[in-house]
Length: 408
Image 1: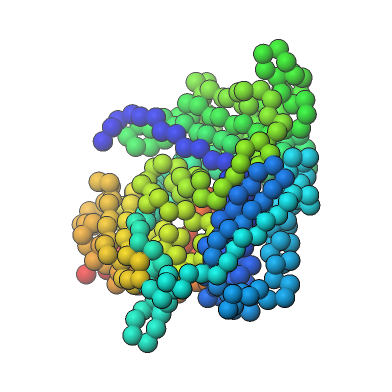
Image 2 (image 1 turned 90 degrees about the horizontal axis):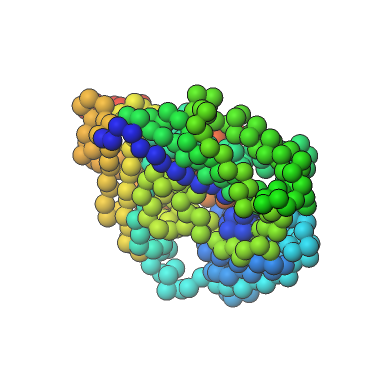
């Protein structure tokens, strides 16, 4: 165990071009699941200057059957996409919710994939693809998430809320953050560097003698105030270095500034680099895809292990083969933080007994066949709570059963 080290995680806002693409893809997942809980969706999105393109495969009762769209379905898809962009806040000359050109290239799901995945009289529903999925939890924060990522997300969430409420009218939708913490004995003890780059209204920059310094100082003061509100006071010291819009002007942003694609922010979506990642993206995929559902259940299991006090850190891996229901492997790593008498091997045996880790078992246990995914597509899929049960993989309702299973 290293006594001292620096670790960094980044986040991006809902207006980042890749996150715009993720939210559009997940709005399509939600649309189809609202029509048919058993819908199959694989939707990819491309965004660039005044253009949104959808591509992928779907199957949805009453919407797309036998190779035909139901009346009004195409218009509803386009309206859903434009509403999503409007809610993010894009009304700019380079990207406007009501002005961009829209292309829909969604088509039917491959029958060859469906035959291996669909449940039948003589087989359980199989995984939609091969792959490895990881889940992670740490007691660094109350959310049981890596502190660097947790704070990076919360900075941008607060800025987006203030922008939409009119509290910070100089902010525009595109933004990025990055938090570096110094750890001692595996605990965060100091923020050494914090980076925030935000798109802004004209004039709010000052760099190299250019721009309006008074306006830039207004923006900088606001961002520093957000950081002070989000991070624990003890982490912000005289040594903390702040980089606020370090390149200067950032007026052109979002899809007009850089093309966006679904699934390019998988480390932002998960654990900020503190845990391995299997490689599969989440957004745009219905919950039969283990890229999504198995990543959610591994987070659920890891979080419950830490919440139960069985370990301070936990990583879980599952692996699957296409068309095969049961996972090929279950792996648990407690990183040397396990409580007395708790072993990885015992947990590997117990977890499949507590939750059936087949695609259908996961969906049933967590209740994933619902239109809950658009809200996951910005500020991370993990470490979040919401009214109702919008993020069911964040529940900690398995702790007592885990303790009992380990005690046997």
